Length: 489
Figure 1 (cartoon, rainbow, N blue to C red):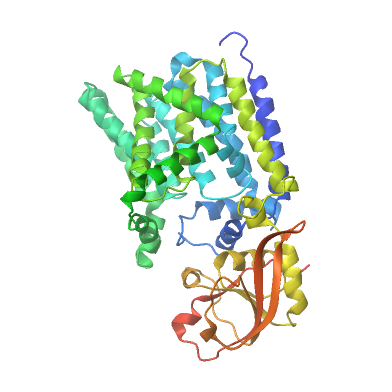
Figure 2 (cartoon, rainbow, N blue to C red):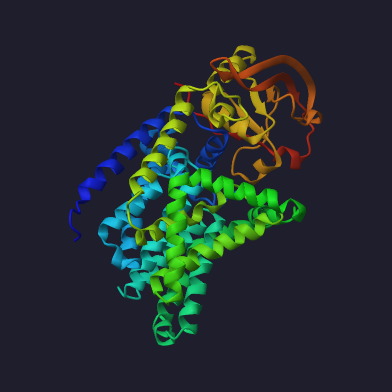
């Protein structure tokens, strides 16, 4: 044990961080995507159009533990966000054995200090499950590198499958493991690779079992989810490569925070040097990081890479920092935590008079309950509430107990929900959007209200009294779903 090492010295800040994030998670209203995932959780399926089902599983567990509330929706994600530090610490111990146990804790703190973790720990999206299971996979691979036994391949296969069930980008670091095994054989460790063959085969079999429900769901729904994600490569604009690459770099610098980004870059540079000397731990980290990084850079040569996509490599980059000293580490962690605190303060209290364009919390989370109250003022008893986009429909379903709230997009046909609605209702739609007026025999404008907070407008919302057609085609009826709402108190 290194001199001055004390686990409690590092546990206290992680525990405090978890408590702060639980408070923030319970205070912030749900964003439209989170409300959408809440619908997933209350309409269980083997997969969904946008992502695999893990976020719905986590959210459903949280709702069972803490109720149908923002805290319930986010509870498991907050706990997992801090809990993944265990995997980072253990992975650093095995993959960077000369770093000492204390450096594993430092790597965990650097990861927690990223703005990405600050955000993903207080909102529930597929990114937190995939971060958690990739970190778990990294721990298992560290045990394999350390020679702890081939049975660890089974747990690695489970982690890889669960990561895929969280988000499809998990396949990229798993491909990095395949590259690493090939390089081990190429560089003279063929006997060791052959000794791992049974474990690798078992891991692949377990992966196949774990991901089978997602594949089965896609097969039953014309491969809708795979096609949706794979279709992102169709829009290709090489002339804008510089813009996309700049956005990719700038987005990662912001989500890592500048100080932590320097540590991530420094750690990766040192790992690549070690990998050239055939250090197995460094080679593994380099392969698992470089395969996804190359894919994202290649994609940015002709299309936009969303800032959250590369989060899948953040646990790998964090473990890589265990090769570095700590001279400036406190400043990097402090700077990252300060940026996270400022984001929390702005989201909770709107301290700066930002517009909806720059204030994400205002644009996505503000004013939904006030909007629900305004809708209830004009809606008659028994009328349904409809929305022209999935986010608005999901938000209203989370804050309008006792009402019939319906979504009216083709995506809802893929959900196991009651379909179809009749009679009079109120359509809720941003005036800049269009909705299918042909679905109704009556469309009567009721006015425009402003959703926002403290006098700052997030968006205008148009209200319309409508009467549903009785002769809608069966295919269109399947696109009109009644969403689960909280019980009326």
